[in-house]
Image 1 (cartoon, rainbow, N blue to C red):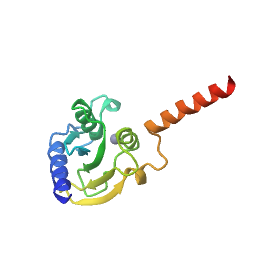
Image 2: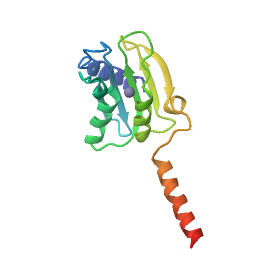
Image 3: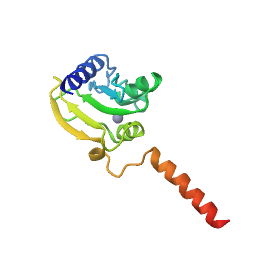
Image 4: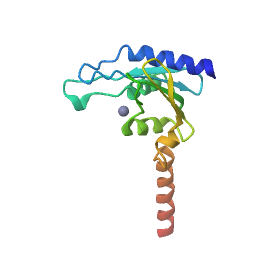
Length: 148
Ligand SMILES: [Zn+2]
């Protein structure tokens, strides 16, 4: 597992080197591991129209999805400094779409040193995910049947 983690950190650092962050000067790289062992990565891409910029996580997720994968087992974020660069609130939800409470998340400093080892469940407790939609559908069916 340690070598996989090291590979993820290496890939996140490579992605970070390609970040387009001229406005914030806050380049971020992300690498994620799918359940079949493949690694996908992304970097943040800012825009002169600031709200249109993207975090690194959506790039890594798009890379994963376009290659046919739908499950994030582990994810590494490499930030530009020694302060914690945890996934933002929106990205926690993006990760949740393809992960669960047990999805492991590592946050690394600019040198790739692990600063935080946590889970998505800890970062986004009581989260809303695809199963909640299914439950809503089931609930709607039960209500429909009970009204008939
Ligand atoms: Zn984000």
